[in-house]
Length: 159
Image (cartoon, rainbow, N blue to C red; front, side, top):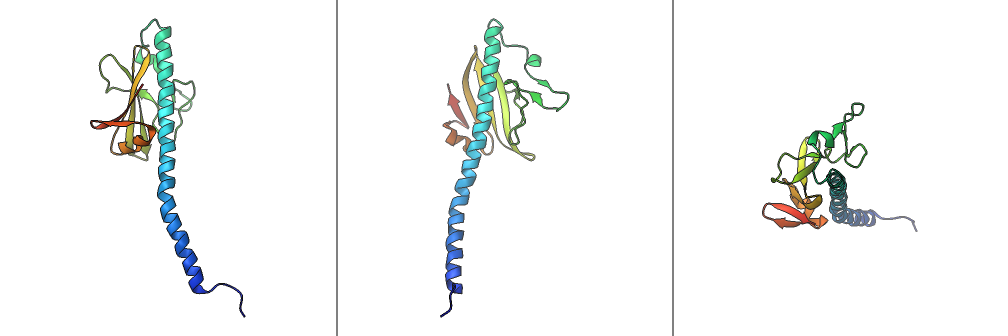
């Protein structure tokens, strides 16, 4: 009597493993993207906290945009609000957003891969408080698992 597996048994095992991989891979990718989105959200919240602290310390006036962020001449990266270089692989450095409602101080970062921008996160700050964070762009649906709700054409998280 020969010991070992038949070809049919091996094929069945390969089919079962491939079905499991087919089911698990999309879940893994979604989980990884949630983690990346959370990184961008956390960096944006920390920067908003910093800019709002500066607002309070500056007698309820936001500092001039030119004094908020400066480029490090050595690395070429923005010196971020949290005091460290923002070297995220998946997000652009946090910057002052030009697209902002009057009376707000807005910060922006974008989820990128190569030249493609998946979505943009914008934090709206007013009177020393973070009011909301919005998520817009072609892949804005990726922001939904972060607790954001759809409001019109963008996902919003209010504070």
